[in-house]
Amino acid sequence: MRSGSAALAGALTALLALAVICAAAMTRGAGGFEYPLDDVYIHLAMAEQIRVGNYGVNPGEAASASSSPLYPLLLTPFSGSGLQRWLPLAWNVLAVAAAGALFGVALARASLERLAIPFAVAAPVALNMYGVAYTGMENLAHGTASLMIVLGLWAFIETRKVGWLLASGVLLAPALRLEGLALALAASGLVAALGNRWGALVLAALALGPALGFAAFLAAQGLGPLPNSIVAKLASHPGTVEAPVIARVAGRLAGNLQILGGQFVGGLTLSLAILSIAVRRRAPEVGLFGLAIATAGLAHLMFGSIGWMDRYENYVVLSLAAAMALVLGLFSKAFKNGVLAVVMLSGLGVYLPEVVKSWVWNVAAMQLQHKQMARFAKDFVKAPVAVMDIGHVSWRNPDYVLDLWGLASPEALKARLDNATDGWVGRLARERDVRVVMIYEQKLTGAMDPAWVRLGRLRLESVPRALIGGFEVTFFATSSADVPALVSELKAWEQELPEGARFVHEGFDR
Image 1: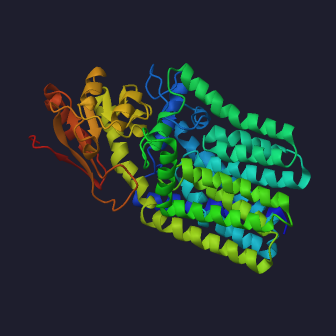
Image 2: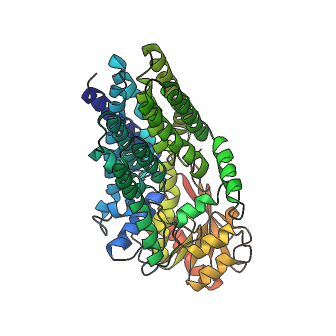
């Protein structure tokens, strides 16, 4: 089977699947195109600030709200215009086509003969490429770079040369997501183990360069070496930051394996390791190749995150599955076809139900909740506000936005992770002259200022499921003197609320 046919089949199927999920999501929405995650707008807001020489979401205030060194930079073109909003979609269209094509190439090289094309057609759906592209984030680009590493390593085994595909993937993977270090360094280790030490050193330098450069850049901004978003994720798993390292790693591994997506990664990792050990006598290089990729899978389970639209682990799912296909090329036809069929069917069972039941509703949730909060902040309040989801509210907003979840505020992140209950939210709001606070109230119990005046709640009434912080956002006035004006602004704002969103006033005369 020629690689071109399988690559084309994979690319076209991936593009078609992305188009279908976007169309399905928009039919449930309140009109027009929208991304299913507020995080996309965090990156767009950061790109706006990068364009004018600041790194953060608010002018003059440094903040590491993005965990990707490269992605905000890719969104800087067209800053200040509506065209910028389409860049995440454009990058993900390219990424999903490239990922589908590269996976098709891996299948073609696995000696699957006529079944390479059917598997290439199944892979973009079974392995959730389209779902990750749908998020609008950098994760599928990271997955594409990871497939470049896998295919580049396979080419190295065949030629003993470090080609452009391998070098490019090793550079891009950590630049897009710091988790890419595991696979990139595993690639360097394999190249060293197979006798090319200079090539291994070059690859290690390419892998570490983006990570170390990013840490140095953050330090120069007066920030910690790890982005706030990564710090927040590290603290969200079993095992506190005060626990010993071994306990934290064990807790994260156990926590990840309790999640269906983590179990799928674990199954792929274990299966690839077993297959690689099985072929080591007759093909030592292939065995080492498979074990290197399996090591990256284990590293993600021990240190990485699983979930949130299953985008964090997708790069390692693609890497493990592609490596498995290549290793299976040394087995019998019936065996390798059966194993790959099980992988594809398992992937469908893990991801497709959540896509159909929940993810397609996220666009509607963004339009009815986050977009409406942003409209109130930008068009009516026109003053500093505090929120827990800053993306929509901060993008193209000239006024200050206080991030109470902490991605764009180290102070807020530390207080939240320390479980502070001393009214820290109120203190930060006063220091920044915040006029309105819009939050998921139950998530900040004990941290708010008791002097705030509850104005009402924005409720979603036509979204049965979605992956969001909550289905009800409470609006507060930080000063009782502002209440009459804010009630008037709320009345004007709610006249244009889309069907499916309702604002319930808190006992004020309407």
